[in-house]
Image 1: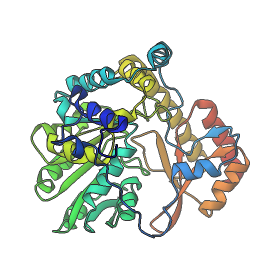
Image 2: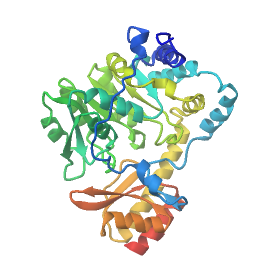
Image 3: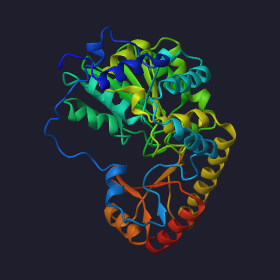
Image 4: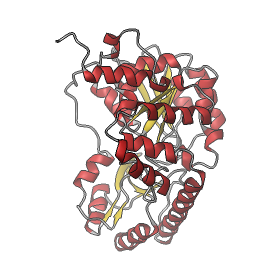
Length: 390
């Protein structure tokens, strides 16, 4: 029976066909060909939100170390989850097409431009595996979100880090200057994590037009819903113009789906087809998560309310830092970064002792802290603990 089509592979091929979420690869054998790539011996990954959470105390007054939306998911999303339980024994092929269809209609693209997955992480890793093949270079800002380039390094890629500008933004000119014949991909996180800065929209779109003629550009828009004009800022229009770029989106931030796991990429159909062999795609999504995402997608009133609460909590954090004599980087997302006056690990540990979880970074050789935006009670808990250390 070794050559027979097993249930997993049948599901995978069906999921690719449902709603045009990913293009067929030509044969069922190709669809089933999930590559097994052995990780090479390298240094351990840098700290991530996951690793820090695992080290955190079991009970915290304020969970401000992962960029989550503590106000979500919405009531409509929760109801959709409950309502979907009765039929959750069924494979959710139809829901895949419904969700992809809603995204396609809103963005003005085809479903063949979309690949869904359980959050954006599997899609970041798929791009990391493909575009680092043969020891290709992955160019990123420094610091920036490290999931894609660190995965690429594990698979034999070469990670090229480009320092940020003086105002802590991605240096697009310097990144473009690093592009050469061995560049596999340029990764742009906009707004950037951990600095919460955003680059000029037109400059980024011009960058994508030029650089995509030489290599793949991956624009991670995880935090775009926190900007005043997401539709005017997104690079999805570059894909509609035929450019060779990938845009990643996630429900994990403003939608409040960090634990539910739902994300997608938008790209040219040939890119979707190329990356589909690295992941089962939409089949990674549970029926309950898809029901919630369908209900929540572009739920305007909820998104506006969650954004307003985030901004209020962020302003409270700004006031706390100013009162204690600290500068900070103005944020375009749901987290704020500021320079510390003590060693970073010590600060984090002292905050843990006071029931507050935060992250620390090294930036330009100095110790910095990233505070994720929480509920107002969490920001007050941060303020009380911070005052004892500042």
